[in-house]
Image 1 (cartoon, rainbow, N blue to C red):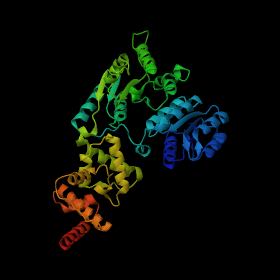
Image 2: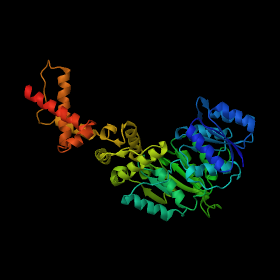
Image 3: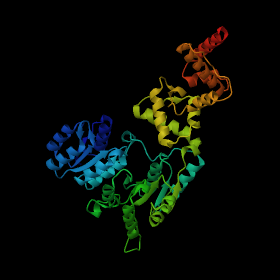
Image 4: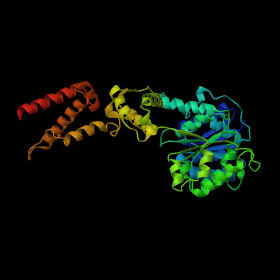
Length: 451
């Protein structure tokens, strides 16, 4: 059992980590401010400090520096968001053992804690009560292409050959990298991910190959597990050469190499073969990292997965906030399935979250969706405006109210055409009741007969 001071200003995360640590048999001391954390460090001299990078107005780096002074033997794990990885790497230079990026999974937290404590961790299975963080490796999709990709992942899971994932932003490449890790016999080891575009070259080089010592390299710290290097196309040429030499040296039978200590998965949004022709990526490195290439298609090419993803996001939100799962109205679902989703799954998730927030009742309607998703109606209106069909024209001197009512009439009529005359569907899309629609239509009729 170890004393663990946990410092995080997010009450839900603080409570989750505290319960998890206690479930592992440790003495957990939760602190919601930096000053509380420092006081706990002075009083308890803990074996481990888990500290968030931002603790309200306090900088987690200051807590780390003070901890190093007050309790030099305390191991430190930094928790950070993806956008703050650079600072987390700097924290390791100050003496932090490792860092975790949000959202993280409890098995990763446990492995990192056990490593930081030198194997003092007590093995306790993760139960439903301690598994509140999202399972990032869960792949949602019933389309044939996703099933084929999952089939490839399971076939190569226990093969140590490097895997290259290619696809647009937001298609789920890191989820697939995680799925590959968890399907393999390495799933008891750590899973670590680095976005190559997130760090300046010097820090990226230090993170990959060690902060002054090879033992600090991410390959060594991920021993027995899987490392995912995202946006590998952003790797500077100088570091590409170092990585190529590292992989060359590690090949079994080459210069005494015994293989990489971990599984290597890389991903890219760019076509690396094009980058090679343009002189931006090393051809020899490409062949080393792409032994098993997997192309992940964009969401617009597998629209049959959209209903499954939407249902998953609705359920996930309800579980996270402890509320009732909202339902997506049929007409709103149609818009989601027609939209091309240039941001892929990430954009779909954000749109569903926004719709949940905007919906007044238990059902999400088209009016609750982002305007960019419902732009097809606007496109129809714009097309009509430039067509040869007669448009509503008002003489100069008409009031602004007259103009607004005429445009409202035009918009209602175009929406009715879009919905093949269905007034119920039109009212839903416009975000008004059917009674309001009837009333507006009657007003329009009266206006036409009296002018």
